[in-house]
Amino acid sequence: MADVDGLVMDAVLQGLDLLVSTPLAFAAIAGVAWGILGGALPGISPSISMALLLPFTYAMEPVSAIVLLASTYIGAEYGGSIPAILINTPGTNAAAATVLDGYAMQQQGRGGDALGISLYSGVIGGFVGLLMLVLLTRPLANLALAFTPMSYFALGVLGLSVIASLAGPSILKGLASGVLGLMVATVGTDPVSGVPRFTFGQAGLLDGIAPILIMVGLFAVSELFHQASEPAWGRTSHRTTRIRFPGRKLRRRLIKPQLIGSSIGTVEGVIPGAGGTIASFLSYNEARRWSKSREEFGRGSPEGIAAPETANNTVASTALVPLLSFGIPGSNSAAILLGGLLIHGLLPGPRLFEENADTVIGLYTGLFVANLALLAIGTVVLPICLWLVNRSRALLTAFIYALIFSGIYTINASLFDVGIVLAAGAAGFLMRLFGLPLLPAVLGVVLGFLVESNYRRSLVLSAGDHAIFLEDSIAVGLLIVAVLFIAGSLGMRVWLALKKYRTAAPRADLQS
Image 1 (cartoon, one colour):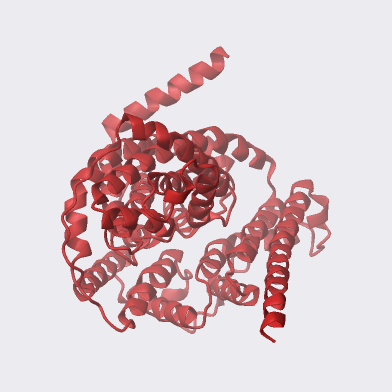
Image 2 (tube, helix red, strand yellow):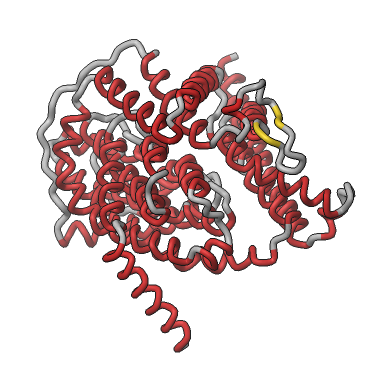
């Protein structure tokens, strides 16, 4: 017990030292501020907000860079509730549940109350998520200490199995998207033989295509292309609203939905592929189920705001558990953060805790500062968000394009990289057009090298005998989990299809 207390005290002291000796606090505050602004802009999701910052983290210290990206995620999850409440437009996917009661309160002249409940619940969810992140990540990472190349290959396959739950309505389209990402990951130099592959004589492709270029193109540029294809970019009317935090009586009433939101957010965040959107709607549904005022839901219920906002802000931290423990990004934003880790040579897993303990402690410290700063920054940034939300989309698009291209060019001072981003953006636009989900492609790009390199190393060790994958108990266990994960996702799809068919059949009989 004394040893545990000593380790905790050492970690606290190291975190305080990082606060005073590095720009950690500044990175956390800046990330939250940028995240709130990005989340408040309709169509600019947390992952896009993080992707826009990713090029600028190259010149930063690893700890500050990771804290900046993670804090942006936290800020964006709250920021998405601002347009959801004010203009009935969720700034992020996870804020879609907040629209149901948030905008209703705005129409009743209680928009300031709704914003206060959102921010108050978001801060609570953030601290609960941070606590779960600290408690769960290291124990799970210790499981990976005995990992071999076969185990890492199986781990990569497990990460790719998430595609089954992220494929959307069509599993075939999800698999097609994942294969496209894996194809992009093979561009460059062979990891074993050193032979150039699919470079087409372009020297800029010898080192492969950096995941950052694909992520910025698929998420940010394709979203701008998609928005430009919309019929009209109308300018909304200006609204003046001030945040009003809940009083003591209302805070007591919000305890139950906040407990529901934080519990569901913890579970959904730890499960790869679940994410804040699912957690928000599940929390909203359960809060309504257990509420004494069910009739208020959909008509301006404070509980209908507290539950989803607590959930999606909890997910913002707990989604990092599988990422830091196993290197499995369970959401778009986690995939961007994984890219940030790899950019600075940081490999998720037990080695991260052994060789880069200061980075992990710095991340925990930065997230603590970010959640503290969220209250103050959320209040201060609101007028700026209101101003930005009411600008024309043409001006916003021009600003974001300038930010993207300047950021990408500064990485290697290469117009070739800018061209790759534009090509990825065009590909992403076509994928959206044909209903192909983007996240499987990103997972393929990010995890492709992990899967291929460890597959090839395993075969080198076994002289080409694939039975080596069955001789490693960890690899066998992970592959079994991957199969179960895929089978569970497919089984759920079949069950939903049968349920839909059974529901539709009686209606068809009645109509006939």
